[in-house]
Length: 76
Image 1: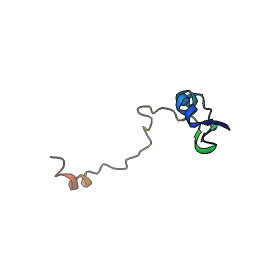
Image 2: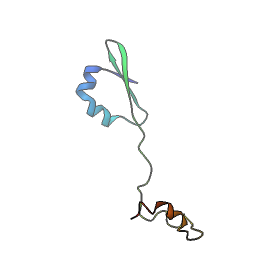
Image 3: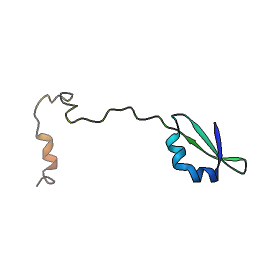
């Protein structure tokens, strides 16, 4: 684990964050005392959403407008 001072972290924060590998840690100290830790996060591996990707996953067994009667006052 890399150790740097608060002053160095303030001066180089953007650079430190962009160079941090997933799981890598940087300990930030002040006067030899640990104060904080930067930890690199893993990139999100989820694919972006696509329109229509859930088509066919919901099955409506019968048309039923009966439940809409409770909302008639809101639908006017």
